Amino acid sequence: MKFYDVPLRVESDPRENVTNILLERVKKNPNHALFSRKNPDGTWRDVSSGDFLSEVQSLAKGLIAAGIKPGDAVALLAKTRYEWTMIDFAVWYAGGVVVPIYETSSPQQIEWILSDSDSVALFIENDEHLERVNKVKGNCPRLSQIWRIDSKDFSDLHQLGEKVSDADLEIARSNAEAKDLATIVYTSGTTGNPKGCELTHKSFVDHCRNAAAEIPELANEFQHSLIFVPFAHILGRYVAVICIYAGIRVGHLPDTKLVAAELPVFQPTFLLAVPRVFEKVYNNAELKAEAAGKGKIFRAAAQAAIDYSKGLDDPKGPSLTVKLKHKLFDKLVFGRLRAAMGGKVKYAISGGAPLGERLSHFFRGIGLIVLEGYGLTETAAAAVIGRVSWQKIGKVGRALPGTGIKIAPDGEVWLRGINIMRGYWRNEAATREAFVEDWFRTGDIGELDEDGFLTITGRKKELIVTAGGKNVAPAPIEDPLRAHPLIGQVLVIGDAKPFIGALISLDPEMVPVWTAQNGIAEKLTLAEATKHPVIRAEIQRAVDEVNSRFSNAEQIKQFEILDVELTEASGHLTPSLKIKRSQVLKDFSIHVDRIYANA
Image 1 (cartoon, rainbow, N blue to C red):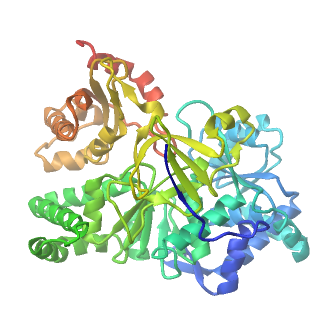
Image 2 (cartoon, rainbow, N blue to C red; image 1 turned 90 degrees about the vertical axis):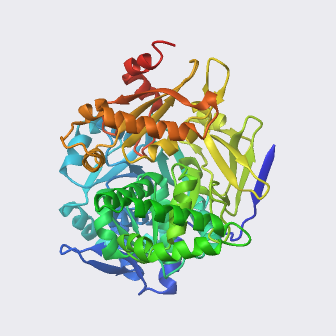
Image 3 (cartoon, rainbow, N blue to C red; image 1 turned 180 degrees about the horizontal axis):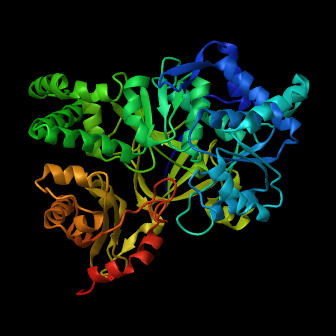
């Protein structure tokens, strides 16, 4: 089996926990701006590391006074916001264990997480959250306290802690060591009840310090970023901790729809997003150019950016012709794109799915280096990431220090190291199944090259075996097709079938824009759009283009366009926006039958 190990660059004291990260930051400079908070008038105000620590300590004292003891589980259900990180650190300061819950969770999902984790207290944002919790709290016997962030509850909790001494607070804070449990993060599984991943303080402390040492271009006090990924997902919280460690100033946005308007105001130097966000940026820019009659110019500029980026990988560098084109379009197009993203952004991290070579080259060509990351909840976010100094576009990157990668005989990616979970909470059978000795079986299929760069080709359980015996990984087919402006989601099918098919949903936000720019005057409902001949022809063109990249046995022969949007609310996407394949196949079995009706 091929494997690659990267030694630790930094090793922490085993007596430390995540709160030491914050204490170190304050010791370096208590006046350094660590966060920015949105004012009612739309401006941003800075919060120093010292002030943040004071808020954390005040809230932690309140938790202790309210009866939270070391080892107690405290759950948090909220959108991405400043208070989330404050609560994270306050619970850790009080010696507790944080249990994040997606803000979009149903009452049944909330019940499962609260009851399974034995959470004794819960932070929520508002009365709507309280309504959901009230429906199930009777089935959560250990849940005794609920606090609303957007109410007097929060200030009362701070006030309650005034009677707790600094000495008692320090006893609670220093109780947890690196080996102890910091958080139970429930996987947003596509089937069954989610499993709770036990992540220790070491998973955060050692992982953050080693990652920061490996990507110093991003992890330094001169960087600032807007975070809008859900904090219930481990990626957002891991990045929040590394930002505190490195002194990166952070602003929070609760909704991705607010990002475009805030980028020019906040002017981040780096971004964290899923590939769909980068796809939207590109597609919106192209559609705006089309609307202004400059579609040809944009496409020529995009190709110039891609050619320039590819030239950077050549030992001789880009040719003179490519450089001249790039310089021209930098003034005409690229500068405006950078300005729309705030004008200062140089780096981005993309995770959750492959970004695709074309988009990676495009963004690098316009001056934005996108580093791809790979990891799972079980690996405390990124275990593998690209480097600014050494990129291989099309591959994820190399393992972070303290991490090992192995490719099993069947192609499955195995990981081990400082960031791997301790196990699944109260699920020994699942834990045993997930590990081979100290190697965690990711369930992903991948390849390692001679330099240790990892490529992910798909999920092991999602591998399609056609009736003809051909193994087909759906993700490499789905990802480029999903990049089309009209397409929302794609599900490639064909297991035990004579050929590959696909279920495709449209993007309801892009349909009216695209139709208006392509000579369709009438306003179409989503259902009408799926049947419109011009739209069907465009989807066929997109399918044909993607098919040209694959062998005949891997090409989509038939597809169905669904007349509904696939969303988390509809039950077809996980909170991390991964498609629930079994649920989609069940709910749209009629469409599957149509694809194979004449087979």
